[in-house]
Image (cartoon, rainbow, N blue to C red):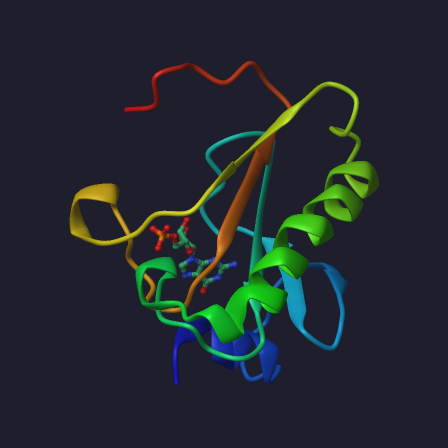
Length: 112
Ligand code: 5GP
């Protein structure tokens, strides 16, 4: 089981922000911005590079879910960034696809 599957199964705790049948959103344990939430599909897709066309619905649901999360945490108007790390050079550490939602401060560009 990935660490995120354990959070979904309530085997380990997390600060959950929102949830649906398809996804769960919770605060990152090592926040890199005042708002840093992970939006995670409940059905495991290891990484976006291994997603298939049949995963398109859930991938879209993660992006639409980000609107709700951003509104709930007060960054919808000020702005926020969505990040998906894929593979070693991108810094992916958990092999369970997730969208990072970052906001609450000005975010530098280009990212590191
Ligand atoms: P990645 O580096 O794979 O894109 O992102 C994985 C993220 O998961 C990291 O930002 C890391 O801080 C977060 N993370 C790892 N373990 C846990 C955990 O047990 N709980 C929570 N809430 N976040 C975690």
